[in-house]
Amino acid sequence: MAPSRRMVPIVGLLLLIAGLLTACGGSSSSGRAQESPAGFPRTIDNCGKRITIEAPPERAASLDQGSTEILLSLGLADRMVGTAKWTDPVLKELEAANATVPRLADNAPSFERVLAEEPDFVSASFVSTMDKVSSRADFDKLGVPTYVSPADCIKNNQGDGDGSRAEPLRMRSIYGEIRDLARIFGVAERGEELIAELRGRLDAATKDIDASGVSMLYWFANSESPYMAGCCGAPGIITEAIGAKNVFDDTSKEWPQINWETVAGRNPDVLVLGDLTRKSQTAETAANKIEFLESHPVTRHMDAVRNRRYILLSGAAMNPSIRTVDGVEKVVEALREFGLVD
Image 1 (cartoon, rainbow, N blue to C red):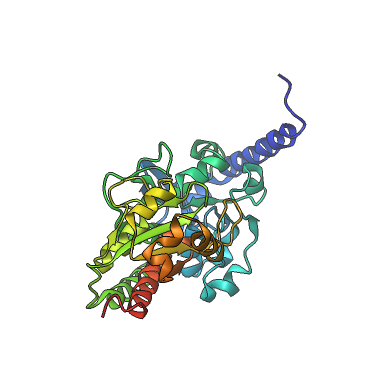
Image 2 (cartoon, rainbow, N blue to C red; image 1 turned 90 degrees about the vertical axis):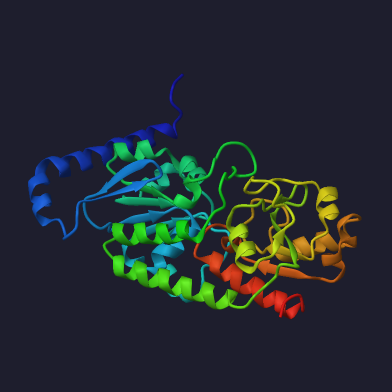
């Protein structure tokens, strides 16, 4: 079959970039080794793959909001050439830095769109995002190292419901991602400072909190066949941190799709609702979710709906990211306002 007209410029672009990379490597390999910054080249184990970083990246592309906000928090905006796949507005304290970095796409960008920025490093929060753009092997062929969040790699990404986990996710996986990225960029001290800040906030939020009598449900998106949190992802970190119970902790799927009759039957005390600004599913915003819950013949009779016990979280807070700590803080604050904990 003859290639489409769209494939021709892509192939040309790949060949051009490959040629440039080969030329650079062939002409100055010894000089580059001599000029490597202290501690580089650096090799890091990532998701069963060893990646070698010759020098701190200067043209990084981040394919998910979670990865982007880590890099921005590490003060690396001036070394980023693009971001993608956003569920929410960027953290307020990162707005100015984020405004200096081009957005390649609101969702997953094309391979050629990423390559057009001539990246020297590509990171992603999710295996699925990286796969939608291209395989890590394809980036390897162009000499571009890639990194995927360990929080996603340690789960089984096969099947529906965004995969499943054999073991509960822990904050140490998120801290490990911060530490890895900080080392890759040669800013290890900044990474440790960010980890210490997050740990301090988490300790402060959960001090003396006991929500053992509170049942919760996490709804990410979709009204026809809603994605509800299973036991062991980022919502599991939030629930365990405060001692509450997730009414769907009997499934290890990350985000199983569950019918409304089953949801109503679990009748949680509190509904944690994703308040997303993306536009890829139905009922993305919290306002749309609440409107649905209060008008649906089954859900409108749930205790949490009748008492309007809603907690609104960003999509990023319900995914493994630095925002998960925000999620803990907001859930604790809301439970106190509802009078469900002291």
